[in-house]
Length: 140
Image (cartoon, rainbow, N blue to C red; front, side, top):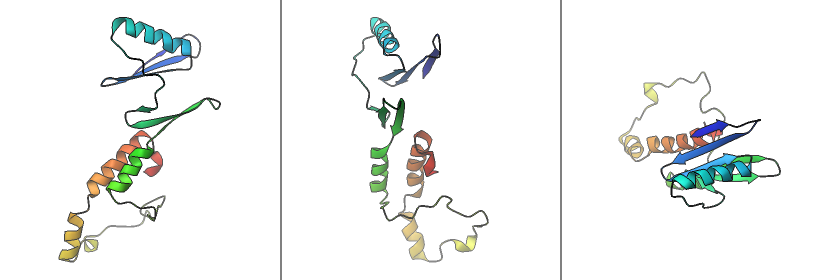
């Protein structure tokens, strides 16, 4: 990511990921100037207004002067992959502060142990951590 403070209170941001580029500024003139300067040096295609970047959907509220990043499709895929249904109980804190884990709470039968070997816990947590870091800190 590159950014530059321009005269006044204006900024220009240039985000580059592999072969995708996103240019962000409040000024359409500034964006067009950067595009012109870059296209004079590099071969580029202008694909118009971006709707998705690095797997995140971009939603614009021009009247409210807001831009939001979302991961609705990614989170739907995570729900399907790990069989998380809409009946899942959500809590603001998974454990109360005084809850202590003990070895005696671990598996007691071979069946319980066998069942847990098929639960992709680390993969599910990693998938959710990606969403937490990018757009959904509320999931933490």
